[in-house]
Image 1 (cartoon, rainbow, N blue to C red):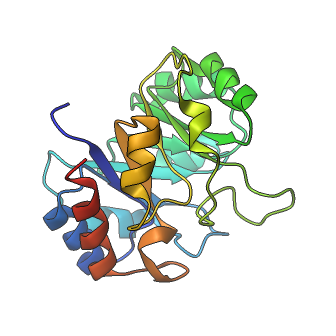
Image 2: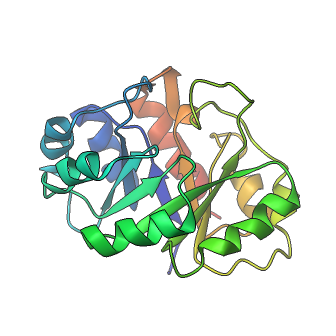
Image 3: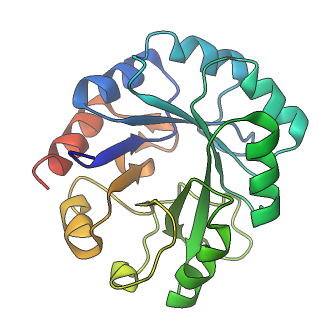
Length: 214
């Protein structure tokens, strides 16, 4: 791709969706997980997607979803891909892609280099691997907590699928993260919020501006 891909995740209002598009985001993410402060229902996803141009991909973030949940999301007609953010196996990822006919992203929780190496089990089952920070045991959410991992772990790692970087990214560190990892896609959620689940238009614009020179 000619420039870095940017995903603004956890959007829930027309104003912040509009800001992401205006700022040059290539992907927008909608979280469908009731435990998350960023949760949006299928009808909300449909409404929010109505004004999104076709070149901007719309990603539904789900956690160990049932086929019934996925079918409800597909029925919105709004989605470009699913992002699996739970304990889904490569077999489950492949089954979702086969059944619903949408690309599948798999979030990979990273603490050590072994976690990155193990992600290659998803090659051929997931269309994109999203490396995120491993959350503490017992945490209420599998992501979106503003945690980061040691980005140098990605240096020289043989990654057998397209991939992106998530976890703890923000306006002040995204350029450094790109420099260290060479990430072709960056994904931000809590790093552009004024409070949990409340996105800031100004922070979205500033984050995308911080990425563009990279």
